Length: 271
Length: 316
Image 1 (cartoon, helix red, strand yellow):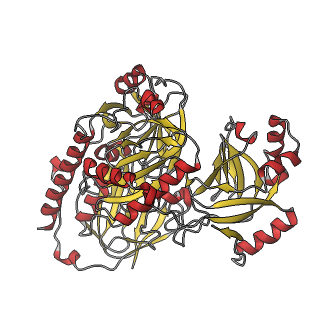
Image 2 (cartoon, rainbow over the protein chains, first blue to last red):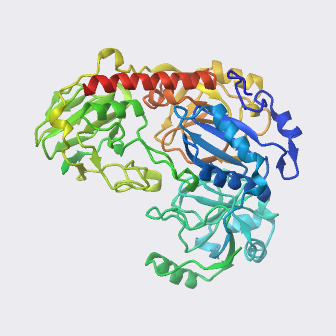
Image 3 (cartoon, chains in turn purple, blue):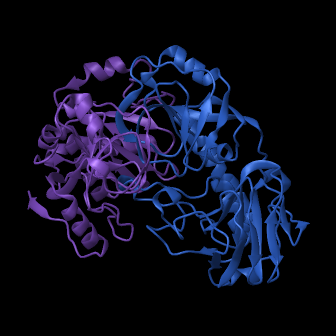
């Protein structure tokens, strides 16, 4: 039972709960999820405190099970890298009741299946006007441009979340690229399609133009944001991507086709 | 049916309803009126359902020409609304003839005014909402209203003829102050802060900086101390989230806030205080007051009872 006046989080780790978090830590996340209060309309179910595919799958398993359960008062969910945010209407469901329902789902996570993961091939041009920060990244990491391209492209990346504004798809960036912090001075007018890295993450390509504090290393001609479609995104959490280097000429051709709506992105595989 | 032509757009004028739900997982902000209460009452005053789309003006309101005879209501911030150059009453049903000029003067109190029209503003529904979210170009033309824009309203509706002229009773009209309490529920990352940090947050006076818009407010005041790291693994940032980056200065995310973020969140503004907070302007000051989740839900219940009373008053 949860004492009604207990501040938070629901698992009692509220004041100085860092200890709880550490004691609860296992290889692939916490042994038991933490249920954190997020204001008077949200609960965040936190499965771990690291970038880990297993933890992320738990997030999506709970999301699918919760959507299937159709619990009155649950408005929507927002699955993130290591936690599931549940947005509810407190006039229709109490926080205790909702937590009980979520814990029930947590108890049967092993039985929950996830939808198939698609593998998208993402064409990319690196450097120059297509990636103004590319050379700085090479310098910071003491690598040649070819080495960076070798590390960044040709690998399958698992998509952890689609967030921020317009559904940026994020993946775990391999070393040594993962040592790049955020930039001290943000880039302001970064176009849609910009491929970004910072803070251990890669952003497949930017869905909408806007500012960013991440390093801008290349451009993809693909689009991510389709507000007229449902879902409004091409690449979803749980999918995989693989970068394929292309030339500026190929970029221009593909970009034209994409803008005219004649180019379907290549789905390499479905597993 | 044509409702308004924009003669002057004002500082930042958009169309908002109660927001866009079900798409946070795709990076789509909830959006909607920054002051939900003011929007709901404006709609009730003109005989609409509470969640219809209306015009939201910010500090400097627009100048609009009425393109048809309409029933309208001004609520929210007092930005000195006028009809044909004469002061217009607020929180009241008004009938305006075709050709009238609706305009605003000096901002007297609050930050965001609402102008509802009978039938509701007609924009195509995008992901279930007519709200304009400029950062993702959603709703309307995907931008704030501009000079020359023509805004439509939905068909005249039946209730308009049936309903009378209403004025919200004085005691139900909110008062927007330059300094006030903002009630918060601690978490979800209050364990990232020292005890002293939490005390600073709950006792200090924080001023709203000029970096304040529909996305969020940056505040300045006493520095809030973290235990160690200020950043977290990115998670959800619903409206009301109070993020504290490494500089110790809080950022409150509001209706147009992004769906995820990587700063630790010390607390979340209660639903009932998000509207009044959105009426605060740069230079206004707030102090945070901690409430329990139970108290926050009780306050929300009271708010809904108040709405129910207003609904009954305006519909009898």
